[in-house]
Amino acid sequence: MPRYMSSQNLRASLELFGLPAQKLMDEAQHLGIDVGSWDDKSDQQISAQDFGRLFIAMVRRSQVAAGVDEESLDAILELSSYRMLFTYMIHAGTLRECLARAASYFTRFAADKKSFSLEASGDTTRWVFNLGAIDAEASPDAADFSMDELRWLPGLPGRMLALYLWHRQASWLTGNYIDLIGVHLDCAAYGSANAYTDTFSAPVYFNADWCGMEFHSRYLDSPLVQTETTLDKMLSTFPAELIEADELASSVSARVRGLIGTDFSRPMPSLEEVAERLITTTTTLHRRLRDEGTSFQKLKDDCRRDAAIQLLRDMQNSGTAVSEYLGFSDPSAFFRAFKKWTGLTPQQFRSRKA
Image (tube, rainbow, N blue to C red; front, side, top):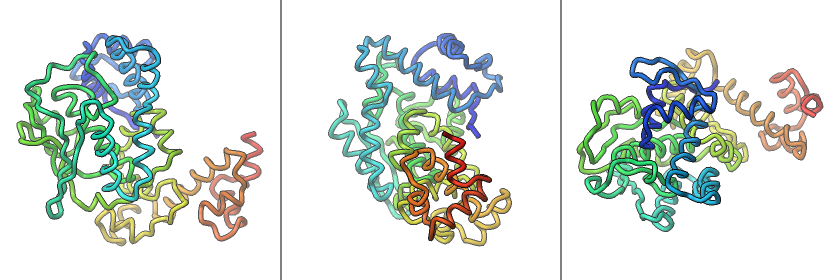
């Protein structure tokens, strides 16, 4: 089920490009996206996928306005630099190692050398974004937009966008929404500071002496659950899947599915391991899943079913190979499970798809 966001949040996000609301609305209408009236009282909802389409369209508009040539524009829209960065990141063992790789990447390759660092103090970690002094930065403008750096825009919009995207990316990488203790911004708020709290589901402190986020240090030891296949999917719909990661914040079953992931080349986490990562007991986890109408076993089956369907669509993967990848003791057990899940044997499924 696609994640939805309000047109108010859509407008606030896209106005980071420094374009008037009417131009944003015109672009949305050109793409066939109904965004409502754009006023503060509008309760219009749009899907994360439509937000992603409009976001990329606005990237194109901003880069054309800045005089970027067509070849460079294609590389930007294909997220070429981020594909290289994330391919490097997802082969790390834990989130700690993953973020260290990202910090090293920005220090070495970003034109402005802006990067971030992790500062642990007991059970709390500060994720510090070193984005330079804000008082020397101009108001955001389309010509200032750059996706090749940690900070895509100057000023408060650039800081908000950097923190938002990297928080969601870290949550996506681990399959577990990272609950923030607080968000700190070394600048003044535009309007009411309370309006920013919903973005991070955490207190936001302005005029701080540092810029970044605080969270429990346990998240740094979380293993990564994404693969190059899921990375391709994430980048092809960017930033839709990062918005959908918000669902992890409110749904226990979504968090469990995220922790199980789709990479079955590694051992599937046990109930005890999942409960530990969610900082709860197995009894409480069972109860909360039951309250959501599901169970740990069903979620494991759902994840294996989805992976099996995806793998069987590739005719080069044999049923036996898929069975082994998903951890079944023998092919016949997998065939029985697949028929229970879909009503079809793997061979029948492939025949219909063919």
